[in-house]
Image 1 (cartoon, rainbow, N blue to C red):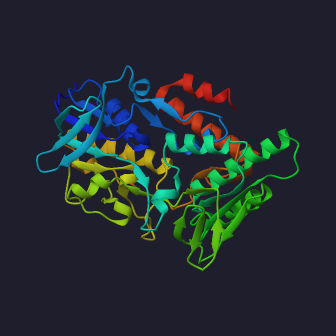
Image 2 (spheres, rainbow, N blue to C red):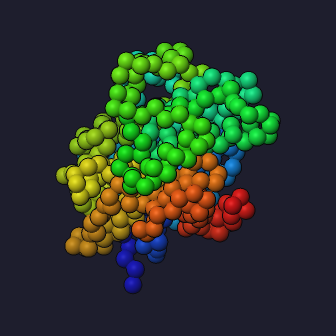
Image 3 (cartoon, rainbow, N blue to C red):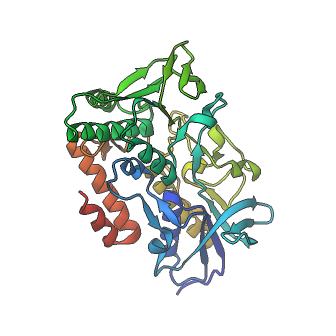
Length: 396
């Protein structure tokens, strides 16, 4: 016999964590009176690991939320969240028509995603291209497609995003070079960073470096290779050197939504909310924080990196724990057991090369790139059924 809860659960923000929280909770609560509301300022879910594919116009990177939740007991609200009042258990929102309203919740899962981490570097905000949204990727793709482009494309940040972007741009330029039957390119790609793929296995780092260099990417990697200042056509590094550029792209990591600092929750590294082992915000029972908004530490006390794989795990655990609390079974709360950084990943550098580790299996090259496609297809099938997965298959 089903219990009638008549409760309101709000998922504040979509993304990988928010979608998983909503879908798992909807499945668990079938037949109950609980209302599940998913709020996001965009009408679509962005497949962030696929953003580099926009550069070479392959694959696709967005899915409408309504296509994901169709036929499910989930209410989607397209609106901007302007305030979270924990004491009154209210979410303030502003919709597309600039109408303001407040929503009451009994349980809240905060999945507000991230924004580019922009340290206080002179000129960074004024001159850098960012790479965090569909529009960012489209701006870069448009710039790259200009046949008159020449000089240096400088990418600052040697994490997975910077490595993928460098490989994608280099692959596009190499194909253009082959198409035009020219022996050299007027464009140089320079990846500047204190390190490459920090926290990832040494074998993956070696393969990534070797492949990028085979594409003609110059790796400017050293302890003094932090960006110190950005001017309209030149960047200065902390080691005293400088690099000229035609295009400067910043991929120096992400930080959590600035809204979180206004909630009164305990904030840690890069604006992320400190959570307990059940992914609850400290000193709360009804507020869960997931995805890029959550500060989760690994067994060594280091912050777990933000990525889609971990975000999905967060969303599922939070949903199961909200369900347990609705059932009045606090003893059934599940702990989130964080994996080590670099335990599962798939990093592509163009269409035909990637480095990956899934289920303890390391792959490099063409096979790894296909594995990343299969991971994407599985995700699409899980959240929206077979049609989108097949759409991706035909681009295999």
